[in-house]
Amino acid sequence: MLTTFPEMFDAPLGSSIMGRARESGLVECLVHNIRDWTRDRHRTTDDYPFGGGVGMVMKPEPVCDAVRDLRSEGPRGVVILTTPQGEVLDHRVVQELAAEERLILLCGHYEGVDERVSELVVDREISIGDYVLTGGELPALIIMDAVIRFVPGVLGAEESAQTDSFAWDGLLDCPHYTRPREYEGLSAPEVLFSGNHGKIAKWRRSQAILRTAARRPDLLAEAQLSDEERALAETVLRQERD
Image 1 (cartoon, rainbow, N blue to C red):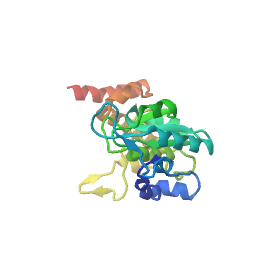
Image 2 (cartoon, rainbow, N blue to C red):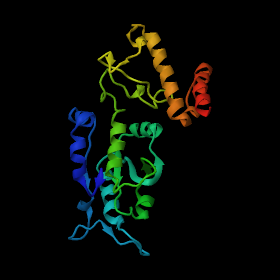
Image 3 (cartoon, helix red, strand yellow):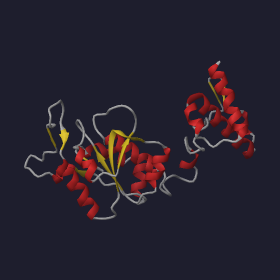
Image 4 (cartoon, rainbow, N blue to C red):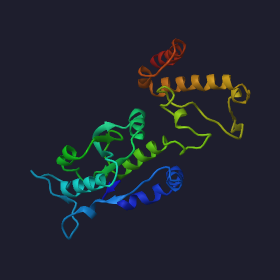
C-alpha cells in the first residue's frame, strides 16, 4: 500500500481475518508512506492544479519513484490506483486480482493524482462504487479484504469464499440461520433440520435464486441457471412487475 496516511491501515491489518492471515504468513501486507519519496524538506506530496480550480493534486515524482523502487525490490506486481473513475470492483475483478502474486495499491487523495502517474506506472484503475470518498485508503482496504479471502488457507475449513454471494454462479447468497431455533415468533426453516444434505443444498440454491431475483435482478442475465431455475426466477420477476 502506498499512501500519505499510513496510520489508517494499522487497526484493520491487525484485526480479524486480515490480521490472522498476516500472522500465519499466508499474506504479506506492507504499508509505505509516499512522503518517504519526496524531494523537498517539507515532504510535499501535492500541489495546486495547472489551470486553476479548487483542491490539490498529488505530485507525480514521489508516486512514480515509490512505485519504481518497490518494483525493483521484488516481483513487478500489478499497480492499482483507487479512483472513482476506474472499473467497478466486483467478484470477477477480485478473482483476477487474487490470482496475482503481488499487488501495489496506490491510494489517491485530494482532487486526485497527476494524470501522468496513470500513464507511466499504473496498470489498473479500480473504483468501489459511484461515489467520492476523501481518499483511496478505504477502497484499498476493501480491495485487500476481498482479495485476501481467496488466498488458500486464509479461510477455515468451515468457511469458503466459493460459497458466498456472487460465487454461486453469479447469485446472491442464501439466507443463514443459527441458534435459537425460534426467536421472537420466527422459526428457522424446517428443511435445515432434516439431515438430508441434498435437500438442504437444493433449498439453499433455490433461496439464492429467489433472493437474487428479488433484490438484484440485473445479476440474472449472467447467472448460470438451468431452465428450471430460470423459470423459478421468472416467477419472482413477474410478481415484482405485477
